[in-house]
Each structure stands twice: as C-alpha cells, then as structure tokens.
Amino acid sequence: MPETQSKEKPRSRIRSMTGYAEAVAEHGGTVLKVSLRSVNHRFLDLHVHLPEALQSLEGKVRREVQEKNPRGRLDLKIIIEGESSSAPQVDEALLGQYVELFQRLGRQYGLAERTDVGTLLRLPGVLNVTGARAGGQDPAARLEAQVLDTLRQTLRRWDEMRADEARFLAEDMEKRLGKIGEAAETLEGRHAEVVQLAQKRVQDRLRTLAGQAGLDPARLAQEAAVLAERADSNEEILRLRAHTMRFAQTLELEADAGRKLDFLLQEMHRELNTFMAKTAGLGEGSLSLTDTAIEIKGEVEKLREQVQNLQ
Image (cartoon, rainbow, N blue to C red):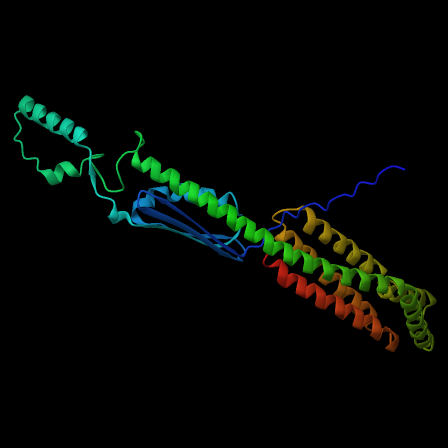
C-alpha cells in the first residue's frame, strides 16, 4: 500500500501593517538603539528620526526600510547614547602633516602663519569624537556599518511581528469566509424557490396587464421576459462564490495583498446588493433570503475592517 504524503499548508506571505520592533547594539561605550513602529495607511508614509551625527545616512536608511514595506505609516528612530563617554581622539600624525603643509606653503608664497589649534582641530580627520580608529577602519565607516546592521536586525524582528499578527488575522478571516461560503451555498440551493417566486410575480403582473383593454400581446411577452430576467439572482450568487474562492487563494498565497483583497470585498458587496434588490419584491417568501444576504454582508464588512490592516 503506497504511503500517503501529507502536504503542508503553504506559509502565508501576507503581512500586517501594524507592528513594533527594536534592536540595541553596544560598542566602545556607545549604545545604538533602533526602533520601528508602524500602523496602517493607504500609502507609504515614512518618518525617519536621526541624530545630527547620522543625518548623512538618511538616504540609505530610507532605502533599507522601503525595500521591506510598500505602504503604511512608519516611524523609525535611531538614538546614540553615551557618545560623550568616549574621549576625543586626535590624529596627531595627520595634524603634523597639516602643519608641515601650511609652513611649506607659507614659505613658498610668503604668507603669514596665523593658524591656531582651534582651526587645526576642525580640519577633516584630525579630531574624532566617536572613538579612535580600530584596526585601521575609518570610525565613520564603522559607525555606518553598525547602524545599518542594527537597522536590519530591527527590520527582521518587525517583519516577524507583522507576520504573526497577519497570521491571526488570516485565521479569523478564513473562518468568516467559511461562513460566507456556507450562506452562499444555502442561497444557491434555494435558487429553484427564488425562480418559483419570480414566476408567481410575473404571473401576477401579467394578469394585471391582461386586464387592460387593447394591450398588445407582444408587450405582454416583453414585460414577462424583463420581469423574469430581473428576478433571476443565480448569476450574483455564482459571482459571490467565485469572489470568495479568489479571496481565500489570495489570502493564502500572495504578498502585499491588501488592496486586491479590498477590491474583492467591494465586488462581493456589490453582488449582495444586486441580489437583495432582485429578491426584495418577491413577497414574504423572500424575507429569509434577505436575512441570509444581510448576514453575509455583515461578514463582508468585518472582513473589510481587517483587510485595512494588511499590507
């Protein structure tokens, strides 16, 4: 007897737009903290808060975040603490080269030597307030690497949190889809009843029209065809079930599915409105159909609220 292999359910790729994460790194007495908070938003609204020493990294930081998220309101904060605890470091070898250069140029061009220590310390590379060079690595480059590494840790944790929240949302939405599917199946099973109610309505209408003197028989036939077509709601039920199936597939397999899911829910809502409009005038026998359609609309509205939180 051949062994049966159970297929694991594919891991959902959807993400919630709501999440928070942070990562902390410490090096040489300096503590670097990166935190990221996000909530739902129609478009990408990224706010980056950096200390003055890291303003030059804003472009790289933004690109790192934008690659992970297409929309939502995000607040990213990067804080450096304990900078003052690191003693300023002077590159005396470089300082000596500057002094020799100034003296040589002064002799060559007959310029007065008015350079003071304050001016010398402001020259590029002379004074390092973030710590001395380690292993020949430029302090600015080392700080940039540390910032980007800590940012990526934060992004990974943030993505994991959004995936967890999206999984809970997906589980709840799947239950609601099941209820919608069952209710739609009920409506589809009662299609014959709807047809009978529609036929009765057409017959009543025709009897009314037949009592009018001089009415063209062709007019009667046309009126009957129009009434029958308007009352047939089977097409709306079939489309509703098709949208429900497509919603479930998208929820399971696609990333960045929020907008597509919202569109499908709009289509489901439209089909329900059309169905209710068609069955509204079929008499008391259609009241239970209307009640079922209203229950489905309630589930659709709850789904729409949850989809607003999906990326």
